[in-house]
Length: 592
Picture 1: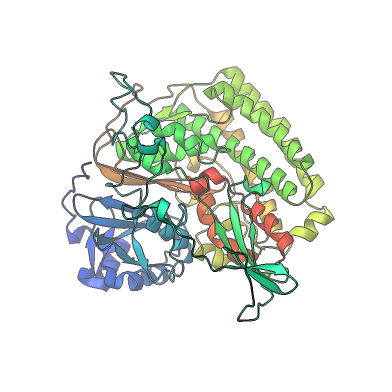
Picture 2: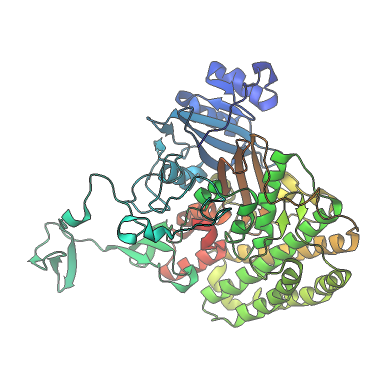
């Protein structure tokens, strides 16, 4: 694979505003980067990060990712930081030779970098010096290699880019299982033979009556030290509220939580590696499967990122349709989140069914517009795939003006003042505002902690700046406020939907003719939207070919989990599932 052709760096005089201030403070350690932002020398990276946070006011680190420039021989770590008052990002980067692959960790500055740095280590092999817990996060510890490196190949590897020649145009496909040793999608380190492994375990198992036995032989032994009452317990991955693919390692003192570590990756399928082999348009239906509750708004985030590189703008009617679909999606998500929060509280499925009934009516509209209820694949670069009829608009208005307000009011009436819900949710899983920002949380989790940050207002995209709505905010930062914020946001979505449905113009739905293959000009872009679970961002690097050179997703479900330990410490085992439910994760988006 060829790496993107680098353009000549911008002259130093072109650095303006905060980037110029950064350059003035750190001198030659700060240099202009190709396309956008600056490259900061590793020996001052941590100090510069504190300066960016404390002196320049970029308190919110949204995204951390890495790019493998294999032909140039280095990795680039890319950071996007924002001011909570709103505005665009300050983009800064760090570089390291591929054969060294070390960069200072910024967890001490922004704790929200924790899981994102671990992901870059896991998938790229970049070691973040000073990270408090640098280990794999989406793959298991014994995994061989780092699969987002450009020179990594899996056992079923076929070609670098789609469309694969075995499918198109000649069509002589051979099943991957028939092309590899043992007909299995497994590879081992070259110096390791699974048949030669010996069990050297000396783990002791408690067998009762104060006795312990060796795990491998069963021999009863006397422990050399007294076992304490502190206990480590695995919750999951079989728990139904985690879809069977999420585990929490909980350290307990009695029934009080001392520490909790999320363990994920059971569903990981390397969405980003697939995305770098797909053509740009082929990735659109893959975004459906990230947060499969929020297909429409996933499509929108990806479309906006690619449109930034293409320099195109959708027609007016398409913009309105995008907002309508995105706000209906927000209501769908929050109905689902509230219903299953009650399921986590033990009100088995009855509240969820009330919420799901209303969701189904919105999915009826999605199905008619796109052809699919959940995996909509509706957005296109420069517009949307299909128009809607006047009858569709009329039925959408009936939902927005009549049916949905009654349903939200009913949920509010039944749940908000329920004494059991208050007893289980108020004061539970508290996340203070400073920590909500430090951990890079987003969406309802951030706003329920008193931070009124919403991408639709902070850095408006599409046509959101035309609509009258409020950024919902609550101030206690507990499970109860994370429930209330979703009720608030559904009311605000109805406000936006009424305006959009009343104002939608006639006209085209696509800028230019539809194309299945596009060539995106070389460059880099980060497109983000305020998804129901928080900021969903797509970082795209183009080398001018029909396939993305780098395709990365800033997944709110994944990053919001960074704060789970902080939320759970000091609570009881019974509170853990409720706190997790209040974050509202979907594992397709967590693991990608």
